[in-house]
Length: 116
Image 1 (cartoon, one colour):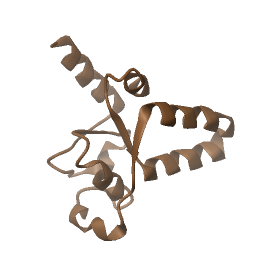
Image 2: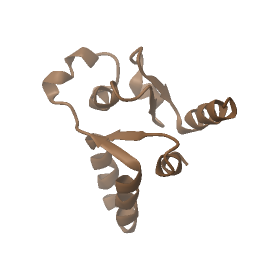
Image 3: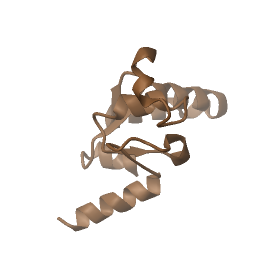
Image 4: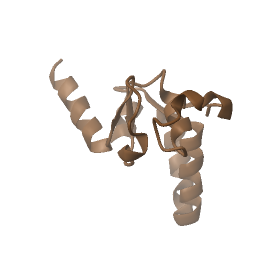
């Protein structure tokens, strides 16, 4: 649903390089036949931002799980919302980003659209 919203340009969807690499690795291991479709969706729907250098992560210490700090750092200045099934990995979080599950994100978008 989120990628569909991005595909029809209702939202701008941004992902870090790290996220794409992780998804491709998991798909290659578990569902390799889905990789071409995933890559097509990425090309059509996502704006990919580079992962920050390790020395750029220091300000994010303690704001997210160490493995996910670079994701938070990559999207911080571009996204008011970070969508993840692992919301607990982004605790206590950063005041400029609200971390939401996909379902919570869809509810917020629906509410915003119904307010127009």
